[in-house]
Image 1: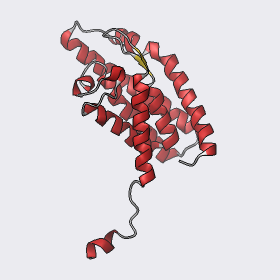
Image 2: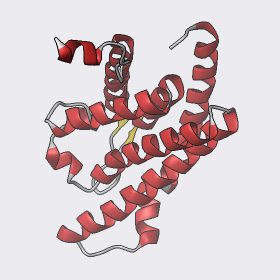
Image 3: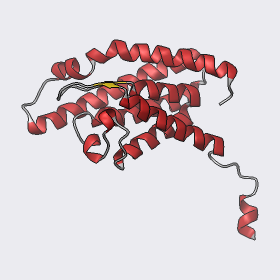
Image 4: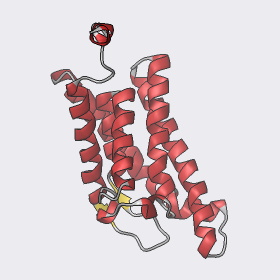
Length: 192
């Protein structure tokens, strides 16, 4: 009886709605990852994964967005085919492009921290997404260079950036702008 009264009045960390939204946006990220333009190895395929991440953060906020990205990554790690080309498993995360997927957690973590510290003003959200994407690029590129060098001749940072970052700058900027625009319109009509 004492145990029951001790928990009465405590607000749960997540409501049922929060859990449903986290799961829904993890599924959205999976669907976005399946929409891809394949690229031959060692190149990174063009997908809408980053658009899914940006939408989750913009529509759900930092905390729920972070957990949505975490669920997506954990599903993939467990073998669910949620990554590009319907792939999944630890082999993908430990492969050359896995650092970019793990980097989504850095993007979401920075967004959550900045939102908590500075609020949800538009400039904060934009700075958080840009900074988070830069973290994702940096972590993913370093990861790519290390893993790629295990079975190939080592490449320099310039080459890795040309293969894995430069081609994605404009598309990711467009995805970011689209996610901000969509989230702004949705938030005016729907309370998430």
